[in-house]
Image 1 (cartoon, one colour):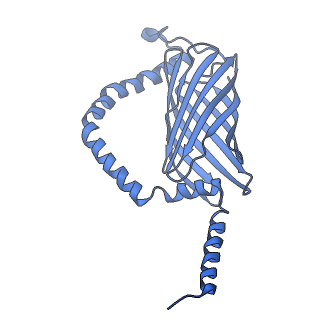
Image 2 (cartoon, one colour):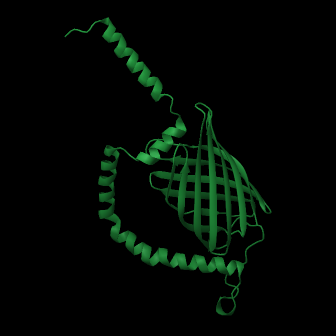
Image 3 (tube, helix red, strand yellow):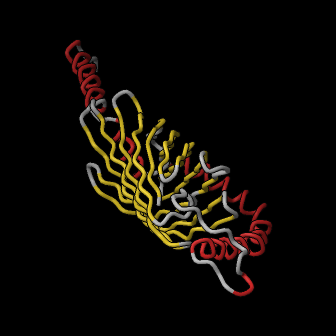
Length: 258
Protein backbone atom coordinates (compact mmCIF):
# COMPACT_ATOMS: atom_id res chain seq x y z
CA UNK A 1 0.00 0.00 0.00
CA UNK A 2 1.38 3.45 -0.91
CA UNK A 3 1.89 5.97 1.86
CA UNK A 4 0.94 9.56 1.26
CA UNK A 5 2.72 12.77 2.34
CA UNK A 6 0.89 12.71 5.66
CA UNK A 7 2.43 9.38 6.68
CA UNK A 8 5.90 10.48 5.60
CA UNK A 9 5.65 13.74 7.55
CA UNK A 10 4.46 11.91 10.68
CA UNK A 11 7.38 9.48 10.50
CA UNK A 12 9.93 12.30 10.18
CA UNK A 13 8.41 14.22 13.10
CA UNK A 14 8.45 11.05 15.22
CA UNK A 15 12.17 10.51 14.60
CA UNK A 16 12.95 14.13 15.43
CA UNK A 17 10.94 13.95 18.63
CA UNK A 18 12.69 10.73 19.69
CA UNK A 19 16.08 12.32 19.11
CA UNK A 20 15.16 15.39 21.13
CA UNK A 21 13.99 13.25 24.07
CA UNK A 22 17.23 11.24 24.05
CA UNK A 23 19.20 14.49 23.96
CA UNK A 24 17.74 15.58 27.28
CA UNK A 25 19.91 13.10 29.14
CA UNK A 26 23.18 14.68 30.28
CA UNK A 27 26.66 13.36 30.94
CA UNK A 28 25.95 12.55 34.60
CA UNK A 29 22.83 10.56 33.68
CA UNK A 30 24.81 8.68 31.03
CA UNK A 31 27.53 7.84 33.55
CA UNK A 32 25.00 6.59 36.11
CA UNK A 33 23.28 4.43 33.48
CA UNK A 34 26.65 2.99 32.45
CA UNK A 35 27.40 1.99 36.04
CA UNK A 36 24.07 0.18 36.35
CA UNK A 37 24.04 -1.52 32.94
CA UNK A 38 27.73 -2.34 32.50
CA UNK A 39 29.30 -3.27 29.14
CA UNK A 40 27.35 -4.38 26.10
CA UNK A 41 27.04 -8.07 25.20
CA UNK A 42 29.74 -7.71 22.54
CA UNK A 43 32.13 -6.08 25.04
CA UNK A 44 31.47 -8.82 27.61
CA UNK A 45 32.21 -11.53 25.03
CA UNK A 46 35.46 -9.81 24.03
CA UNK A 47 36.49 -9.40 27.67
CA UNK A 48 35.81 -13.07 28.41
CA UNK A 49 37.99 -14.21 25.51
CA UNK A 50 40.82 -11.92 26.70
CA UNK A 51 40.49 -13.05 30.31
CA UNK A 52 40.64 -16.73 29.32
CA UNK A 53 43.84 -16.17 27.37
CA UNK A 54 45.51 -14.18 30.14
CA UNK A 55 44.50 -16.70 32.80
CA UNK A 56 45.94 -19.63 30.86
CA UNK A 57 49.30 -17.88 30.35
CA UNK A 58 49.91 -16.17 33.68
CA UNK A 59 48.29 -18.22 36.43
CA UNK A 60 51.42 -20.09 37.51
CA UNK A 61 53.75 -17.07 37.39
CA UNK A 62 51.37 -14.76 39.21
CA UNK A 63 50.64 -17.37 41.87
CA UNK A 64 54.32 -17.86 42.63
CA UNK A 65 54.99 -14.11 42.75
CA UNK A 66 52.02 -13.53 45.05
CA UNK A 67 53.07 -16.16 47.58
CA UNK A 68 56.80 -15.48 47.66
CA UNK A 69 57.16 -11.78 46.84
CA UNK A 70 53.91 -10.05 47.56
CA UNK A 71 53.32 -11.94 50.80
CA UNK A 72 56.71 -10.94 52.18
CA UNK A 73 56.15 -7.33 51.12
CA UNK A 74 52.82 -7.22 52.95
CA UNK A 75 54.41 -8.37 56.17
CA UNK A 76 57.48 -6.15 55.95
CA UNK A 77 55.52 -3.02 54.98
CA UNK A 78 53.12 -3.32 57.91
CA UNK A 79 55.92 -3.96 60.41
CA UNK A 80 57.82 -0.95 59.06
CA UNK A 81 54.78 1.34 59.34
CA UNK A 82 54.28 0.34 62.97
CA UNK A 83 57.97 0.80 63.72
CA UNK A 84 57.97 4.33 62.30
CA UNK A 85 55.25 5.54 64.70
CA UNK A 86 55.89 3.22 67.69
CA UNK A 87 59.62 2.36 67.76
CA UNK A 88 60.50 -1.22 68.60
CA UNK A 89 62.82 -2.38 71.36
CA UNK A 90 65.12 -5.36 71.30
CA UNK A 91 66.37 -6.78 67.98
CA UNK A 92 64.28 -4.41 65.84
CA UNK A 93 65.26 -1.28 67.75
CA UNK A 94 66.52 1.40 65.36
CA UNK A 95 65.66 -0.58 62.21
CA UNK A 96 62.92 1.81 61.02
CA UNK A 97 63.40 5.61 60.90
CA UNK A 98 60.70 7.49 62.83
CA UNK A 99 57.99 9.30 60.90
CA UNK A 100 58.55 13.05 60.49
CA UNK A 101 55.80 15.17 62.09
CA UNK A 102 53.46 16.56 59.44
CA UNK A 103 54.53 14.11 56.72
CA UNK A 104 51.94 13.15 54.07
CA UNK A 105 52.96 9.49 54.55
CA UNK A 106 51.12 7.25 57.08
CA UNK A 107 49.42 10.31 58.60
CA UNK A 108 47.58 10.32 61.90
CA UNK A 109 45.04 12.58 60.16
CA UNK A 110 44.84 14.06 56.67
CA UNK A 111 42.28 16.22 54.85
CA UNK A 112 42.30 16.83 51.06
CA UNK A 113 40.06 19.21 49.11
CA UNK A 114 40.17 19.62 45.32
CA UNK A 115 38.25 21.11 42.39
CA UNK A 116 37.96 19.16 39.11
CA UNK A 117 37.06 20.54 35.69
CA UNK A 118 35.41 17.66 33.80
CA UNK A 119 33.87 19.58 30.87
CA UNK A 120 32.65 23.09 30.20
CA UNK A 121 29.30 22.26 31.84
CA UNK A 122 30.44 19.61 34.35
CA UNK A 123 32.55 20.27 37.46
CA UNK A 124 33.28 18.45 40.72
CA UNK A 125 34.41 19.04 44.28
CA UNK A 126 36.22 16.25 46.08
CA UNK A 127 36.61 15.92 49.86
CA UNK A 128 38.90 13.26 51.31
CA UNK A 129 39.59 12.41 54.95
CA UNK A 130 42.06 9.80 56.26
CA UNK A 131 42.94 8.82 59.81
CA UNK A 132 45.04 6.06 61.30
CA UNK A 133 48.00 4.85 63.30
CA UNK A 134 50.90 3.13 61.56
CA UNK A 135 49.65 0.32 59.31
CA UNK A 136 45.95 0.73 60.21
CA UNK A 137 43.86 3.48 58.64
CA UNK A 138 40.39 4.57 57.53
CA UNK A 139 39.70 6.54 54.33
CA UNK A 140 36.53 8.44 53.39
CA UNK A 141 36.03 10.25 50.08
CA UNK A 142 33.09 12.27 48.71
CA UNK A 143 33.00 13.54 45.13
CA UNK A 144 30.13 15.86 44.19
CA UNK A 145 29.50 16.43 40.45
CA UNK A 146 27.39 19.29 39.12
CA UNK A 147 26.18 19.60 35.52
CA UNK A 148 24.69 22.87 34.28
CA UNK A 149 23.00 21.72 31.06
CA UNK A 150 20.88 19.83 31.84
CA UNK A 151 20.79 20.75 35.52
CA UNK A 152 21.88 17.59 37.33
CA UNK A 153 23.97 16.32 40.26
CA UNK A 154 25.76 13.08 41.09
CA UNK A 155 27.57 12.02 44.28
CA UNK A 156 30.17 9.28 44.73
CA UNK A 157 31.04 8.15 48.27
CA UNK A 158 33.90 5.78 49.15
CA UNK A 159 34.77 4.27 52.52
CA UNK A 160 37.83 2.04 52.97
CA UNK A 161 39.66 0.27 55.71
CA UNK A 162 43.38 0.62 54.93
CA UNK A 163 46.44 -1.51 55.51
CA UNK A 164 49.28 1.01 55.16
CA UNK A 165 52.78 -0.21 54.31
CA UNK A 166 56.03 1.78 54.51
CA UNK A 167 59.08 1.04 52.36
CA UNK A 168 61.78 3.34 53.68
CA UNK A 169 61.01 6.99 54.36
CA UNK A 170 59.85 7.85 50.83
CA UNK A 171 57.32 5.21 49.73
CA UNK A 172 53.94 4.14 51.08
CA UNK A 173 51.70 1.48 49.51
CA UNK A 174 48.22 0.86 50.88
CA UNK A 175 45.63 -1.86 50.42
CA UNK A 176 42.06 -0.73 50.93
CA UNK A 177 38.76 -2.62 50.94
CA UNK A 178 35.35 -1.06 51.38
CA UNK A 179 32.35 0.27 49.52
CA UNK A 180 31.44 2.68 46.72
CA UNK A 181 28.05 4.39 47.01
CA UNK A 182 26.51 6.19 44.02
CA UNK A 183 23.72 8.70 44.56
CA UNK A 184 22.09 10.34 41.55
CA UNK A 185 18.66 9.71 40.06
CA UNK A 186 18.87 6.47 42.03
CA UNK A 187 21.23 5.03 44.63
CA UNK A 188 23.51 2.00 44.62
CA UNK A 189 26.30 0.54 46.77
CA UNK A 190 28.96 -1.96 45.71
CA UNK A 191 32.25 -3.44 46.89
CA UNK A 192 35.37 -1.39 46.08
CA UNK A 193 39.12 -2.01 46.27
CA UNK A 194 42.01 0.46 46.13
CA UNK A 195 45.84 0.35 46.04
CA UNK A 196 47.24 3.86 46.64
CA UNK A 197 50.96 4.35 45.95
CA UNK A 198 52.56 7.47 47.50
CA UNK A 199 56.12 8.44 46.56
CA UNK A 200 57.74 11.43 48.28
CA UNK A 201 61.47 11.45 47.42
CA UNK A 202 62.04 14.75 49.23
CA UNK A 203 60.28 16.70 51.97
CA UNK A 204 58.80 19.18 49.48
CA UNK A 205 57.75 17.18 46.42
CA UNK A 206 55.81 13.96 45.89
CA UNK A 207 53.72 11.92 43.47
CA UNK A 208 50.59 10.04 44.55
CA UNK A 209 48.77 7.44 42.45
CA UNK A 210 45.39 6.28 43.72
CA UNK A 211 43.67 3.62 41.59
CA UNK A 212 40.36 2.13 42.73
CA UNK A 213 38.02 -0.45 41.27
CA UNK A 214 34.39 -1.38 41.75
CA UNK A 215 31.92 -3.25 39.57
CA UNK A 216 31.72 -1.34 36.26
CA UNK A 217 33.68 1.61 37.71
CA UNK A 218 37.41 2.38 37.39
CA UNK A 219 38.91 5.40 39.18
CA UNK A 220 42.55 6.45 38.73
CA UNK A 221 43.90 9.61 40.39
CA UNK A 222 47.46 10.86 39.75
CA UNK A 223 48.70 13.98 41.58
CA UNK A 224 51.86 16.02 42.03
CA UNK A 225 52.25 17.53 45.53
CA UNK A 226 54.36 20.48 46.65
CA UNK A 227 54.72 20.22 50.43
CA UNK A 228 55.76 22.71 53.07
CA UNK A 229 55.48 21.39 56.61
CA UNK A 230 52.01 19.96 57.28
CA UNK A 231 50.40 21.46 54.14
CA UNK A 232 50.57 20.60 50.45
CA UNK A 233 49.36 22.11 47.21
CA UNK A 234 48.50 19.53 44.58
CA UNK A 235 47.54 19.28 40.92
CA UNK A 236 46.65 16.21 38.97
CA UNK A 237 44.31 14.33 36.67
CA UNK A 238 41.50 11.95 37.56
CA UNK A 239 39.99 9.30 35.33
CA UNK A 240 36.58 7.93 36.40
CA UNK A 241 35.09 5.61 33.81
CA UNK A 242 32.56 2.89 33.21
CA UNK A 243 31.88 0.97 29.97
CA UNK A 244 29.48 3.68 28.72
CA UNK A 245 30.72 7.07 29.97
CA UNK A 246 33.63 8.87 31.66
CA UNK A 247 34.06 11.80 34.04
CA UNK A 248 37.72 12.58 33.40
CA UNK A 249 39.49 15.87 33.94
CA UNK A 250 42.30 17.84 35.60
CA UNK A 251 42.03 19.09 39.16
CA UNK A 252 43.80 21.27 41.69
CA UNK A 253 43.59 21.37 45.46
CA UNK A 254 45.27 21.40 48.84
CA UNK A 255 46.03 18.96 51.64
CA UNK A 256 46.68 19.22 55.38
CA UNK A 257 48.37 16.28 57.15
CA UNK A 258 49.41 15.61 60.73
